[in-house]
Amino acid sequence: MKTLIVVVAWCILFVLCWPLALLALVLWPIAWLLALPFRLIGITFSALFAFLQAVLFLPARVLGWRPAPARHAATA
Image (cartoon, rainbow, N blue to C red; front, side):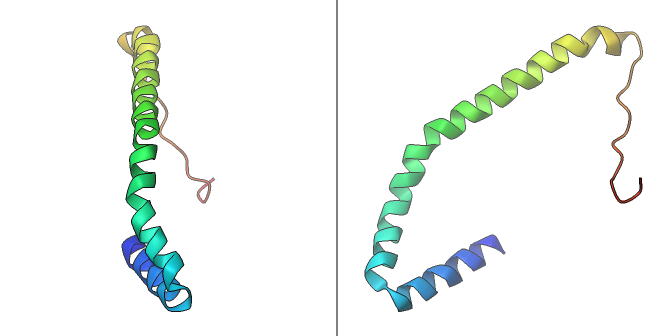
């Protein structure tokens, strides 16, 4: 659904201002390549924090502690 919205928005932009739409079409892969290292750093830090959480909570889990099930705001 997200892809469809992007395509429709690009088509509207193409009709209204075709040079800007073509510029966006050319620059999008360049922007994606520039953002890729930051995404990889984010994935790495997310994995690091998950690992640290697992290591820090290991003694409690060995002793039998289990996290409480998440409560939904609608049922509370």
